[in-house]
Amino acid sequence: MAIIKKTEKNWLLVDQDEDQFIGFTLPLYLDNGDRASTKTTMEAVKQNLRNLCSTEAGERIMQPNLGVRLKRFLFEPGDETTKDEIREVILESINYWLPFLLIKNMDIEMAEIESDSDPLRNTMTIKLDFSLNQNPTINDSIEVTI
Image (cartoon, rainbow, N blue to C red; front, side, top):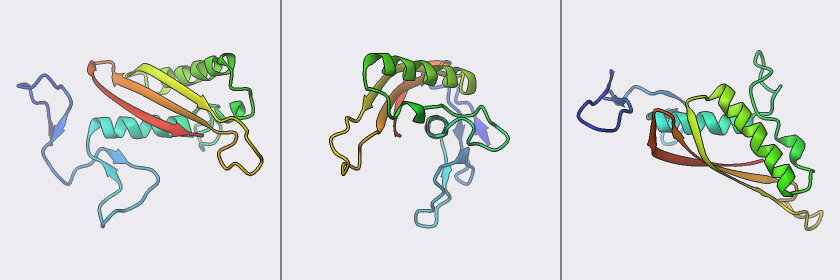
């Protein structure tokens, strides 16, 4: 059963049962027979944020608005105007789907097209530093490549 440890300043739930999990990790893979599951709140939040940024809006059945329309920026120039538009789209989606997150920093790198044989051409890497609104002292980050 999940309990709140009132003696600690960390308000996150601590689950005392080793067999209880919060959510799934994607892609679903089993490592050494373990379940593909998240055990802590921050693991679940990181997984949810990574899934939101990796999902294209309209891709999810019964949830046509879930996701971020990032693929449309892959062939745009990697200037500051495009990066500002990407930031705006990401923040709008996070504010709607994950309103409990506070985005502290967002770095966007867009790959330059070197040659047709370059496997990393037309990609962008987004690094998000975030915390939870209820406890901004606990920070974490994810990196998503599209």
